[in-house]
Image 1: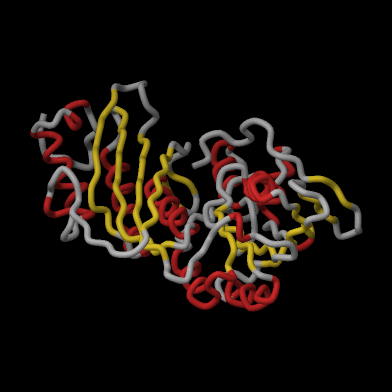
Image 2: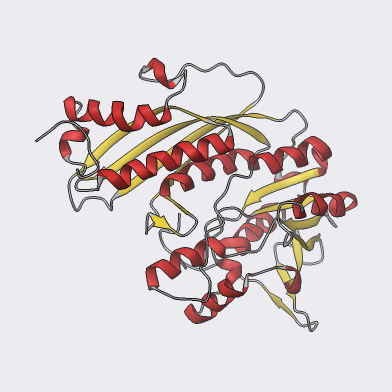
Length: 339
């Protein structure tokens, strides 16, 4: 068998053995695609020079299917860690990349994923500077799993902490909810709609930087609403702050096709995962300015509610007709392997 990786090949155990096959895979696919001055040193780790307060985050990605409308596992793995750093008020700089590949995974698909990682990293302004590749026996994995860890420099004006949340703070989101989760579920269930449901996966670092640069510590808290959806993030906030949240249902936007898919599958969009949506808790006096900035990127950004001391640790949502109900925490796993 040729040791030269080609589009017709599949990954096999030799590609993880540390020998000639692995060297070819690294040199001709991974390092060639992701190359930069730091990675090109090819040491056991990366030598980086950063000054200031640092944020560090890690996340693992086991999504199924690995290719979906709007992205793939590679793009998701970059965006997810970039966004986690951004929610800390940091400017993402460097990522590591860990790959666990199942024997038999097609090299063509693997190459597409590595190219997507490069594209997403370039878009976010970050560099992949170190990594690791392992191959497991057929049936011991599911195509490919990815881990990314990242480091960033915390913005001098940032003070993003739960303890900074105050009564009457505004709760703002940057777009419609549930697109990512329903894009994945539509693929799994083979659902057909008049138009495709597309994942909202994207990097959020630039818009978050703009907000912090302009408003500084008046941005009290940020959190991306991934697994468990918007409701789960808001429950984390109310539980840890011992404050409540009042929501306006009509201000929480859901795209028509996404809403239809949720109804078909019996899912509440409040609990469905997102990959490009974040919750922003800000001082009440800047809420309209923050909203105007977010709406330049997505017209469906909205002020969805406010922080309240009237019902500690509870979320109350009001319908368009004035009825109110408690938003309960998610019990169990609604959508497994969504990211």
